[in-house]
Image 1 (tube, each protein chain N blue to C red):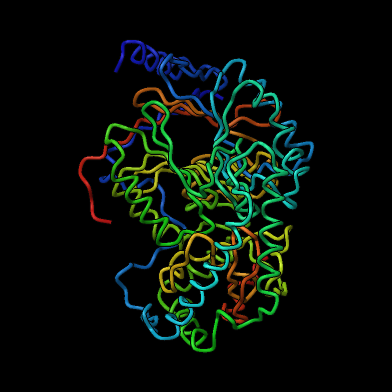
Image 2: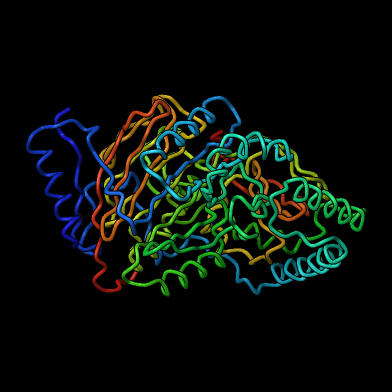
Amino acid sequence: MLIAVAIFRTVPIYASVGQGSPPQNLPTQNQPAQNPPPDLKSPGFQEFSDRVQKYVQLHKSVEAAVPKLKATNEPELIVAHQKILARKIKAARAHAKGGDIFTSAAKGDFLKAMSSEFQGPQAPHAKATIKQGAPLKRVRMHVNEIYPESLPYTSVPPTMLQKIPKLPDELAYRVVSSDLVLLDVKANLVVDYLPGVIPVEATNGQ
Amino acid sequence: MTLRRQLFLIGIFLVLATGQRADEFKFPLESNSVRFAAVGDMGTGNKPQYETSEQMNEQRKAFPFDFVLTLGDNLYGGHSPGDFEKKFASPYKSLLDAGVKFYAALGNHDHASERFYKPFNMNGANYYSFKKGHVHFFALDSNYMDPKQLDWLQKQLESAGSDEWKICFFHHPLYSSARKHGPATDLRLLLEPLFVKYGVNVVFAGHEHIYERILPQKGIYYFTEGSSGQLRAGGLDRSNITANGFDTDRAFMLVEVADDQMYFEAVSRTGKVVDSGVIQRQQAVTAAKP
């Protein structure tokens, strides 16, 4: 091996396009989607956001009664906090069922948004992101139950997150199989889920 | 450029001219430089992770790095207290005891609860930034790049100094030639315009269980290091964007940022240097539209 070390110098950053070409071309952001997503203020999304706010109120009231979790060297405290929070929220929502938050009106708007995402110009990239993020094979979610500890989290296409209502810090969307899951991230609890809204071809890349 | 740096570069060119061996690459080890290691996809708790961390200890004798970036999948599988011990605290005990700090990014196998684990230095946030000398680091959560995180990143990059190195690290690679997953192109669609606009210099990612250095894309250097515990042997399908790669054993990276140069090595579990080089900091001339 004669070459000792490579010295890589670049031209000014904005003048360089790089020496290689990306493996896939990206769509331009200005390209119109075939199916425009619903307005984020549409009645279905609004109803969803209202239900989310009510859930967050409940979460906060429960969390206020639990010792505050700060950064710690003791994972026991982290695990215990999560378990207590989950147990108390589960108890407070003992009668929770699917559709409580993803109401039927909300479902319609989410379906339109998913259609826009997975049939629009960036659909191949959204599907690729899900596949890239190690999609899960069929896993059944249960409302008000812990997200299975050993399961990874499939990446949520960031372009999809721009088409659906923003969530407060307590919650996050997750893609599990072809379902869109609403997860309480602090309690690791499945709050609700919308079955079958993610195209199967996007999730078969295990 | 300091006289010392000039002499060093002249030395490198002399090495090239005289045809000496690759393993004679040397870090400058300047007194005010920023030195760190990077590991990804390491949290298995298995023997290869322990052996790789032992090699990190060994390397630290000659290259005293102060901190480690983790590129996600810090803990695979369960997240019980025993898992934190077996998959992190125990394998990196020597480094932790020596005062080496870890700065974690979350991968798709990580729980949000890891944010509260003090040794990960996330302070309860799943994305954050910190500075070391003239280097500004941005840890992102690529599992969940929502509009809020994008806004945060834009503001952070906007307010970062133009004379600082800007280094982003997160789990999913925007460019990759690995066979398993490939690049996160949807994520690239949103992140790359910001990286270009605000002059991000270098990006580190994991997720693919190989090491790969990508040729500069739009002037930005991309590294994937996802083989510090896991390994997908033969998982790299070298492409026209691959500058170098390694997929036959576990590896980690060593990096020194000294003034306008970034020196790097990728080191295997057995201590073999599988890639090395020097990057000159790109000069952001003007802000370009994304």
